[in-house]
Image 1: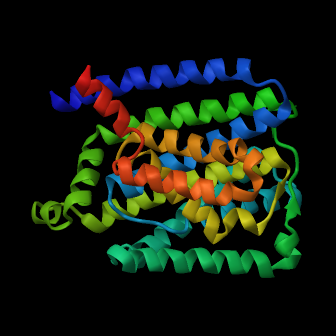
Image 2: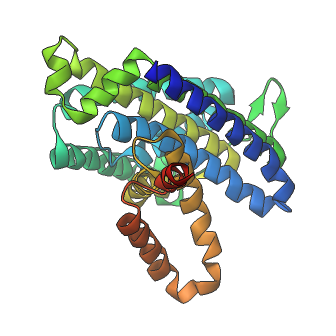
Length: 314
């Protein structure tokens, strides 16, 4: 009964999210605002996938920026150099990233705590070095251009088309994620977060489920990274750098770990915040850091905890 109640509590949230996404274009007056909104949606996709790994399964990753960037590079190379259709290139990219994630999961996810964080950090650094040094394939530090995205003969050129595509992907991902969370698999993931010994003692294959959620999280990141590469028309190693991975982790923590829509809120806020601070150019980094520190001090469970307080008071 509790699981059913939580499921029905999440369904209105998905409806509200869809309504907000439908209303946002009325507030976007030019392509620049559309670009920020689309970037926020793609960041939200990665944050939702990363939250499944960190917030629900309790496994930290400092390499998701690298996974998103690598997925984008693979799709861009397959389309630009080998002439594959963009949709097929993305599908192949996701398959390659799934295999890579599965191969990494077994040895890396045996580690715990800061050892796991250091291992994923090492993977991210290796990916970044490869993308920077393989100039003939990736363009090196200068990056590479990406072909236009077309679907069933239609080329996406308008900003509103990309916004619609990104919004639909985010809504579908949220729907799939909330069904996963309320499924038996989701309950196993939550048990892994608290203690790996407890589920193992009742016959749960801990390594299998940790690997599964890691693969799902990496595939989501690769999908968002691939779509963003086609949208921007350009990709560089900065998209797979260490700072990018840290930014994604902060989105999850800031919004609220273990809260599905907290990851979305954190991604939207951290995407919009630099734009709102442009008038304070000399102090932008200082104010940015102070805001994040303040949220962590006064809302240690993330911004989404505000809604819990309001609901209890109501």
